[in-house]
Image (cartoon, rainbow, N blue to C red; front, side, top):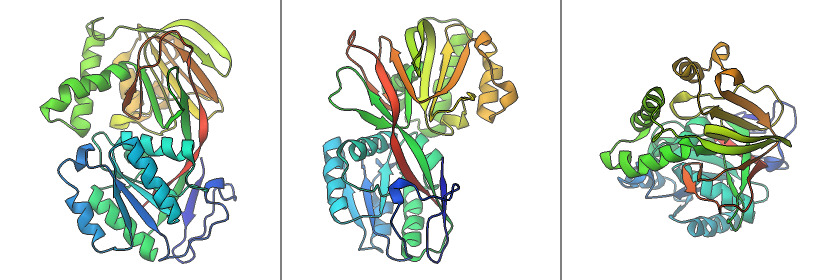
Length: 351
């Protein structure tokens, strides 16, 4: 992945390879002239108490465009308007699902050429994407820091190019785009959150720890009602494994997931990080601790029921639903595999 550092005077982009990425090529930036557009989802987790802090910040920046959005259609319309106004920075104030909807609209409908810089504000419940690629702090504080930098350039900023997943599934009218795909226990864990945990008022790390703990206990107790495996035919760059019994499958371009998990140890080239946990994994506690801490010495192998591989193209044939950035989908049964590949790159602004 390329990282671009902006100096505070000219704000010219320089990558670690010496080349400007395609999405910001041929663009010059000068302090005080960056046009910002903000998309706010008032129904995302952290925003349900109101957009007061965000709107208060915006009163000091009347030139900033702000749209409240709730549906993919709202997002598509707002992005078209921002593109007409030549927005340089697109701030997304919402949860993982809102970011997923924005990426899907950006890559399917291409309102921007090139893409704007994406600034993710932690306005959701889990905020897994924002924690890996976004701005720190509450939405209001993050937005204030962003707008201050866009106006003056008086802060260190980094733009990180990250590969985006393209997901094609039977029954879908158009491809989906996002950063984290999960099936098996991941799909059921998100459903459990919406059906049970959310009603308790739990959010963030406490909700995540509760869900992970539930499935770890069920796995230790061999409770097949909770942790039943799924039969998956797996294709990794054309190499196939038929009928693999998996508890979970995940594919991502994120560096870290909820609770700081880094569940990847594949050594192959390829932007898509694939990890599967088989039906009867061994050394579960040791593995979870190792993946949380990112300790390579504790990464398990296939002999213990774990598989991790980097790939360019992945296809999965299974019965059941999947999650993409926290949103749940149920592909048509018996109509072919779910196919994932790199759908492009997006530039994420870090401050």
